[in-house]
Image (cartoon, rainbow, N blue to C red; front, side, top):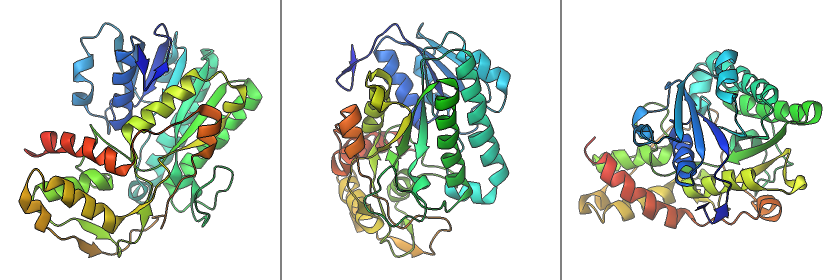
Length: 334
């Protein structure tokens, strides 16, 4: 079987850290459909059991409850593993501003534990979730991998440190690493609740409840919103590439288009009003700007196209059509 049109050896043993989270559970699902043996490591601090409940009866799926801050858990998870897809992290800029110590413990110390465990287990390749927040205050548009600015939040610092550590482990220990700088990923299984919910599911559940979405600032801030299936494709490309020039580096994972928050609300109300016409009448409310937010985010995806043959199948319009059907079916009763 193939994933996103790509051939992947079904005999691979793959560890997905944070495998009960939004992106991690989608990766687990795709890999299991391919016949791979998948180990999921999660402490369920932000991951959800319902995201992986249908996998528990699959003989190729193993759930390990553990914490990447515990080196023994990391060593246990990496036993007999061929590839690591490291998704475990504490996301959210505001969360890191409120509690930088925990964000650092998970995102830096936990990441280092995973690198050490992967090195010692002789894992073939370590692919990790990096972040577009690494671009910080850089005003370059579009964002090109080699040009970054100063970080604007503790979260951004942690994700940049991940890249530095991965680079050192590649050079010093010969561990193949690939970092994937995710740009505002959205799609099925994304949690709309909580103080740190991503903007698309958060707006969606507000609209479903006939509440006005609250936009931070005047709505001119823009993002390169990226549908989950594009992210799955990039992870698989990182797994299967035999191009030596394609490893030990970082890539933008995006669709190369920019949408501001006012446009986003307009798209959401338009699509959701097909399910409920009353949603089309709802207007957004504007609040204060959020501390640590990057004003604009637009990715160059040329490097990923050239070295990994990345070919995103979903722009924001196509992604929203898929995602909003899932959101409506799964969130309307919340």
